[in-house]
Length: 125
Image (cartoon, rainbow, N blue to C red; front, side, top):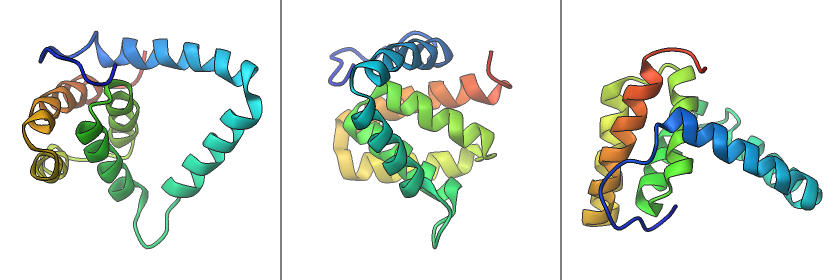
């Protein structure tokens, strides 16, 4: 979904993350070692350390915006909602993404806001 040419957010982010998760299950069967390694990398990168998990997720969502990755926005926004990130924290992280990524990141910042609004409504389906 990277490099979308329009500025419409994708289908609701809950639906998007569920769809991508189902598709990733196929990859877990096809390339289990790769997927296991990627999962371990993610757990290690996002573990509490000098930076807490919420800060790392804010960085991840900013990078997702800069990379224009809708599924990434969905997964990291879902994690931020569970970690209790505020709209102000998100807005500041998105400001850095826009600063570093220019106009395309500004358009994807709007996608991240849509994902926040969706996940802030409550628990996953």
